[in-house]
Image (cartoon, rainbow, N blue to C red; front, side):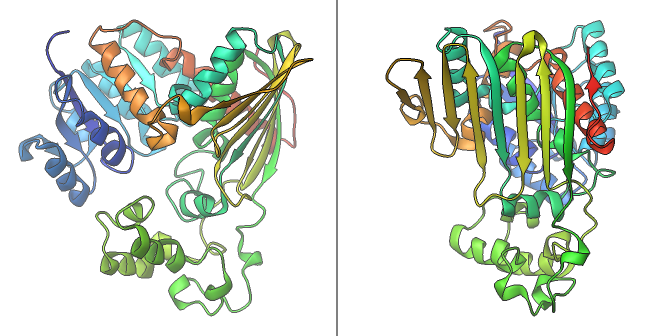
Length: 419
């Protein structure tokens, strides 16, 4: 494709505008945003100013935009979880290729339906499993494919959500309640299910899981606490104090995530108003959240490989850790310090400094930018389907594993068979 790829964006929030659109703006010779939709006039105006699209190409909802004749080559679906299925289906039928935020859908049936529809219509759909595109995980994949530790047999992986991220996104924020979004292990950790299956190159046969919402409940509220942090007598000693989270952090770092989620293009006045009246000013023990704050998942993969995965809010810092035990050695990886240690049995350890492999660690360790770049090149015909590409047919299995884990958790750890 010699011409510039045209893009329509559904959802102009943290992912649609602040991440993907800003990345696309850096490749004007290859892609151009020509239309956008959002329920928020303020965010839509921000998108117009960022991209230069005309006012008549700004729509008050994704549904309104999808009523129009096809406006672009590809559509980015970056709306809330519950909207993905209906909007992606409409976009496929309208003729768009898609970059689809995860999860595909909160239900297994809808995930399969969208994958089947994309295949039937011949549409290209990539799901935003950004971890695959990071140099960190690509290096581990390379080591495994080269046989550095033999055949993977036993894997332990940890998703360190972080106490502050849990409070922001999964207690006060958009993903706090399963009925409004999806279950925690799907919305947050289908990334991890995908990366574990991709690294091993194996299918999942059985799943079991345990977990609960343990801390962020009203009965755990400290004495003297209030409905809102600004009114709370216990706020000074609370690590979840929203004033410290957002207002004090804004004074240090300015317009950055997550302050720009609480208030679009934040100022002190906007943030104070949001903390007084909006969801992010609420006491973390008095919200309408119901998703878990910790969960363990056991995966039995084909060929006998076993995986133990832990998602936990109870960490001081975020990041992921992975240990892969193979027949000839062991790999330890930590995204927090960007190191990969390769321990071949009977030989000296090799420590790989991932920071020497790339200078781009923006957005999910550089994964956001590489995802968009690879998808644009794929749609323009500059590359074929790569080993990394998270096409929807490949992505579905990660969703099925996550949904099976949630089914198991709710059934007290019952083993769920997938194959």
